[in-house]
Amino acid sequence: MATKINLSLPIFLFFLLALFSTLACAKKETEVAADPELKTCKHQCLQQLQYTKADKQICLQSCDMYHGLKHEHEEQTEEKIRKKKKHEGTTQEHDEEEESGEKEEEGEAEEGGEEEEEYPYIFEENCDFDTKVETEDGRIRVLKKFTEKSKLLKGIENIRLAILEARAHTFVAPRHFDSDVLLFNIKGRAVLGWVKESETEKFILESGDVLAIPAGTQVYIINRDENEKLFLAMLHIPVSTPGKFEEFFGPGGRDPESVLSAFGWNVLQAALQSPKGELEKLFEQQNGGSIFQISREQVQKLAPKKTSWWPFSGPSTAEFNLFTMSPTFSNSHGTLTEAAPSDSRSLLHKHNIMISFTNITKESMSTILYNSHATKIAMVISGKGGLQIACPHITSRSQTKHEKSSPSYHRISAELKPGMLFVVPPGHPFVTFSSRKENLQILCFEINARDNKKFTFAGKDNIVSSMDDPAKELGFNYPSKIVNRIFDRKESLFFPFQLPRQGRDRRADA
Image 1 (cartoon, rainbow, N blue to C red):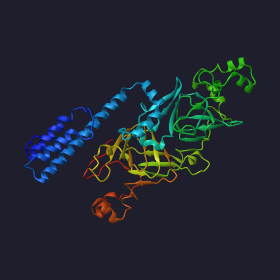
Image 2: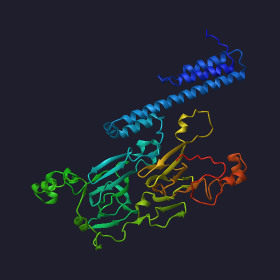
Image 3: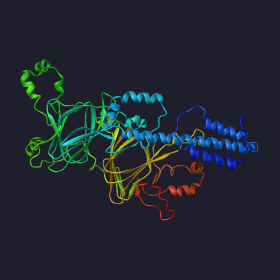
Image 4: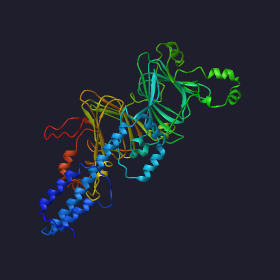
């Protein structure tokens, strides 16, 4: 027979709050279908003889609330432990995880319900890139698969991004990829040799140049500058294995190893009509790595034939230069330049990708906007600033089933700096803003761009101002006249990042 304890409702609720404060610090040991603590709490509510029916209902609701808060606290504790273990993991453990990545992803999909990364759309230069090639004269870093960060990014899991850095007067050895490549020259001056079936076409590349390289095309690169580093962003769209790409060296030796070394000597002798000894000598010579320094004279020999003076120069021969194109939109607070996938012969059209460049003037901001179809992969080229994204996926994990009739949203914030990368999925409103001292420049690859439309929440022709008045009043439960006054403004797309003179309530976390 259960013991009956008569307590007034305020005292019982105080007792319940104290119980929660004590149990919130305890580690979760086991999970059962019916929580014994919840069952006991509700039993005590029903046994209070002096409670009215309404008092008992309040008491039962308090038990449910306590149970929900306790469960949420336990989830947060487990998440902190998981992140700590992940942070303490070794490089060897990461390599093992990468090898079994596909199996783990399948297992996670079957299990379901796994908590998401707190910042699933933010990628840091130091921890989210793997160095695939590194010599004294340069390196190539590859961003980890987007789905390693979060399963929310499955829509772009087939896309990979690589960054090439090369010191002055360096040669990046000839290679081809089993992926289509969109190359963007972030900084520096280069020559790219494009090997066709019977000749080599050479492109002079300046900062801002874009070049599309079809899969299988043999290319080599020279940093033709005598002092400055070369930085190239290479967006890879694999054509063989989804989410993976490989590079294959034709000319090579021991380092880089020539792909021809995989074949037997009898095959090579028959194909190249050369004795084995001569072939062995040929494939033993190169051991300087895939990026190495060359002389001033060697750079000059690799110059396009039409150049006649040192350092060789001339008009860019890339497909287009994003920095010199006419902007799509521009005002005193920012500029947006877009290269749309219009030409049916281009890789931009083939893969439905748009490349854009945003320059936000210091102490300015973009409007709050979202894309209808495009997933934005954005990389900070220069300057500092901030980013905020509204995400429904994180908060929804911790909400109890019957708390609200609509989603709750989590603000993902990040301080932006050069080399940092972020992703904005379709439908997710976001905003970027610059610092007080310098402009913020962002390079963007927008996936699924052909039918994409930008919808804004502030500025001229925003979606709230364009809505009919009765819908505004119903949506906000507020007079449309006041709603119109708040949302209407003359500027478009870029604004000064300053607070109103009255009623200052700064909500932006730089």
